[in-house]
Amino acid sequence: MSENDPSLGGPTGSIPGGAGEDELQFRDPEKAEALADKIAEIGEEIDETPVKVMHVCGSHEQSIAKFGLRSLLPDTVRLVMGPGCPVCVTNMPEVDEAVALAEDGVTVATYGDMLKVSGTSKSLDDARSEGADVRVVYGAQDAVELAEDVDNEVVFFATGFETTAAPTAAVIKSDPPENFSVLSAHKYIPPAMEIVAEMPDTEIDGYLAAGNAAIITGHGIFEGVVDRHGLPIVVGGFEPLDILAGLVKLLEHIRDGEETVENAYPRCVTREGNRVAKEQLWDVFEAVDGEWRGIAHIPDANLQLRSEYAEYDARERFAIDTSDLRGDSGSQHSEECICGDIMAGTADPVDCPLFGEECTPANPIGACMVSSEGTCKIWHEYGGRPDL
Image (cartoon, rainbow, N blue to C red; front, top):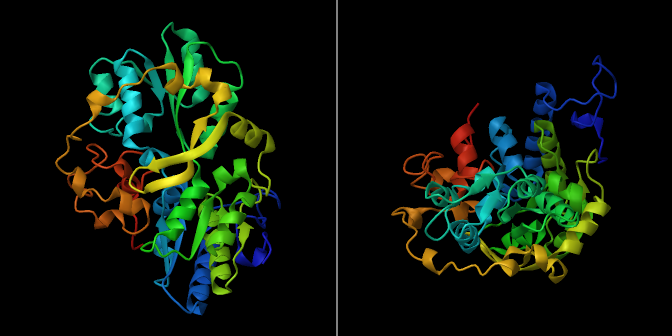
């Protein structure tokens, strides 16, 4: 099947009678119904069902839940979210480091989603309530501009996958001010996909990969994952028709036993990706082993500044002492949280006894309820399996 097969009514076709034959439309109910029918048809043709497919992106989950796409899927197809929330997989010791810096008088700048994520005993929001200087920024460049405006040391607590790591690398290479440094908690998603694929309880049949990360890395990065694990991978966009069309292609590969990578997001993704961004990313960062909260210790899945850029590495610049932060997490319910199982695709938010009761966006217990890309928060807002 070609990437622009008009018979599917996918998002890459023109709109007859529209403003122009080249105009794209992504939320056409008739096309969505046609794609849903195709998914149901393929589901019936697969011998072993239900088929379980996983996506690894909070933006995918937002669209899936917001537009009720699971309600369009047949019982033969199950779509789950894996470790696609970078805030959720930021490990507690990494948060402890940011909290310790803030309590030592450093100005810590980070994304808004990171404020309420708990470390071992405190969050950055806790530190800010006690007088620490913690600022919300939209990215590394904002943190640089903050450093230019203040006399204090500014540390950008950098989280996110390749999509945000590449801009962080670009900023570091742009000769930022001397009072700017980075505490990297950036993660690299392909190794995590491999670990999850190996987990016996996950039992996935294929991946819908995140188009935003693939814009940077290119879809060729997934070829090794396919070769090692025998699972098809389809790179998909984020509009409803993007996701449904990506699922059609993925299910076809599963049905036909094809171990391959396919690009269902050709208007943005190429095999090679953004070569300049990739060059900067791997010039500044190197992949090292690290712990993903609730998932596992994953080889080559954390991004650490290379020694050539040590002057911008907060871990090299400061003696970060987190010993005072170690201890009880302070939550009587934290041991009941199943956020790790949810991110591994072995449980849904509704399986957690805390979901929507003790654990809410106003009072998050697990990291999955904190971030706008966390499965629990998304399901709390939209509902994960609505019967429309």
